[in-house]
Length: 130
Image (cartoon, rainbow, N blue to C red; front, side, top):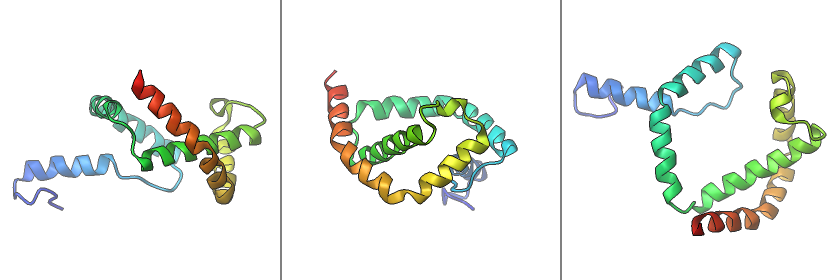
């Protein structure tokens, strides 16, 4: 598919590569797919670094803060489920099991995220002030 609408095959190929690089997926990755994704992310490391730098200059919008709040809520519940064991120390199968349980606790995560939102907003403003 030509994302550029210019007719230039090289531009179309580059645009297609960029498009494929950021497509999100919902299903869990196999070990081979995870390895492939890791290599792909390494290839895009410089672009991602520049994007992070640009984003750090801006104040996060409401959607970004809500996402951070949901992530913090999921991490808090994960900590309870694992009895304080670091997520890095868990096996991939245990992580997948916990993720499945968290997906079933959507309302609980949502409530906790709502409670955490003012703290997340305050932290963002403090970070911007320096």
